[in-house]
Image 1 (cartoon, rainbow, N blue to C red):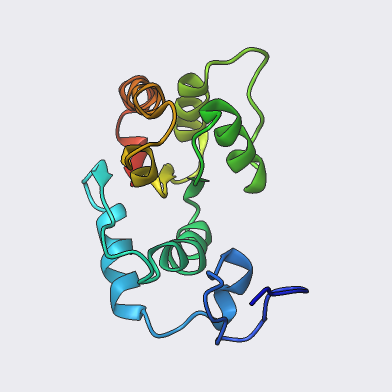
Image 2: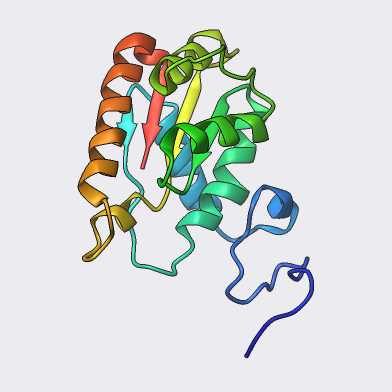
Length: 166
């Protein structure tokens, strides 16, 4: 069955994930949200959100965690695709009205600068990262290497003001 038109706006969206725009109708996950919020605002610099496919991890992130962190001044850069990591980071930062990169600024340097200059630090969310390790994903090893290099440099430059959730 094909769906046509805009996604439903109410709390019963079927298979359509919740995002930041639907935070007002996202409910029923307050315990998980509180635990995740505590985790990413703790001393841990890196954390993983794991669960079976389809349980609502992306909805929990986008309609729950991201708005909660933003209300408290944390800059959240949400990346969900990895074909062009640098461009994905710039697009994600643009969506939250972050300052654009300077000239030919390296993506890792850009992320580190955002973390150093944001009011309450930065959370880099790498959602759907597992898709890179699925069998048959073209260019997976190169993309994973790019993510690893970016994380190594950005976390080194930004220190504890940058946290990573994948």
